[in-house]
Amino acid sequence: MDKVAGKLTVFFEEPFWIGVFERISEGRLSVCKVTFGAEPKDYEIHDFILKNYDRLQFSPAVETDVKEAARNPKRVQREVRRQVQNTGIGTKSQQALKLQQEQLKTARRVEKKEQREAEKQRQFERKQQKKKEKHRGR
Image (cartoon, rainbow, N blue to C red; front, top):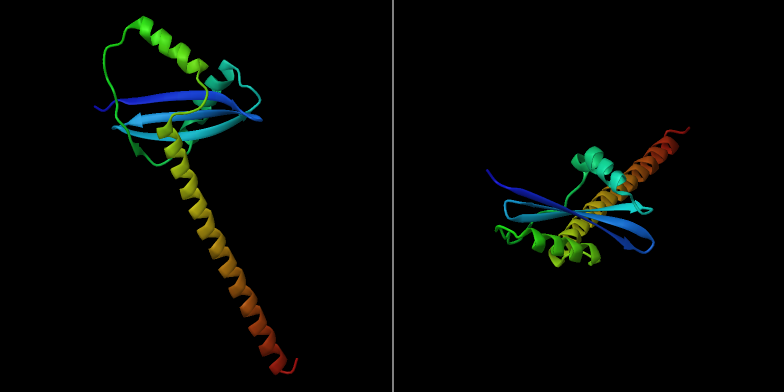
């Protein structure tokens, strides 16, 4: 059975508080960015995860190397302290977010283009209909 690891980093990015969910599954990293607005409390984050985690839109997976080893509890405490003090997100996460942003951007462009074409076609058909009505003598 494969192991799945998750991580949430909350940081302040002027003017909002941002949460970055990182999920590592099968050696692949996918990321989701959430804007909280005001500084979220621990219980608010916990409620958000419980209620909304299944609706988060994660980025496409990016290859990453997963390190697995027994860990010293004191070392884990030091790492947690460093991560709490560390602001920002890892470069792999940034790459995954950028990839997701680009895919959403291209999807929006395609959708907008289809809407424009449909509107042009509708206007063209309306003009043709008016021409036909004029020729019928109405």
